Length: 407
Image (cartoon, rainbow, N blue to C red; front, side):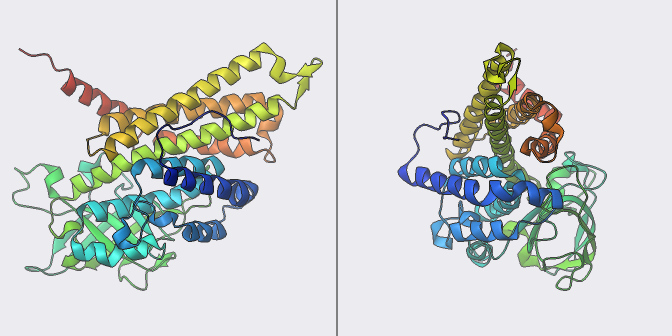
């Protein structure tokens, strides 16, 4: 199908347009033809990941001085949109890696940047991001994983259990949030008592040979979003050297993680945009092939109305996502825009996928058709990087700050 006019982005540089054209070509040739088969087998897309390494995608936003391409969040979001259009799980493989690289670049010590970023840019070191725990998701202040320092300037000893690590098995670096008691716990806000640790590990499941006490129990079986490994992480007296505290000082973890999550929310919005566009493409193509009552179903007004609604949602979500990415790139706080974009894109994605599913009729339920896979993938976007309700809470609070009545 010819590239349509939806989801165009004005004002891109020639470099950005070249990158996107390359990625789009890669998605059409290397991802879409194999995605459904790999997804049904829940198989890790090793060959696709190798292709992304060759394209330099793991270093897309890492500065050039560390061997990356030094691109903006906008470029990254548009790349994710293209990848998610092919298979959302693949965008998950780059997303957590990218959040960790962003956190190291924005908050890491010079030594941490020089040590990790060049290998991350090459895709040799791959990142996972660990905040959630079994009993809590978005309620970050309530985390129980705890780290205690062994004497002045000594190793930190970490104990606890983490949940929902994308790339938990395949990653070699985990940025992990833990409680570290700074000062008087009675008088100190919970978010000041948190620290981000950079833990290097071997890829794989079970007890980790490189890190005594670290266990990745195995893959969590999921309804969709297959292929990528989502895991728990158990830590029993795991020792982390003092120089692997992100930024070199404890007590800043909450803010570092929230910065990472803002970037992640733009990413989830971009995934929603990509999946929605693919659903629209599948729906409009099928509507021009299938006949009922003597004409193509695309000629029935009921179907044209559906296509019009779908396209409008695809377009609105994309423009909002672009706005949120540009805001962060300009150095401004983008929590309001990122929250709005993530909320809108994930809700619209679910609706567009469902409409494409309806257009397919009975065939939408068949595993032979791609829309069946999208139908199971879209719900993850309603939950990942903070539920719709959490986004609305953030947006509501920010609006009240912005529009506060005086006096």
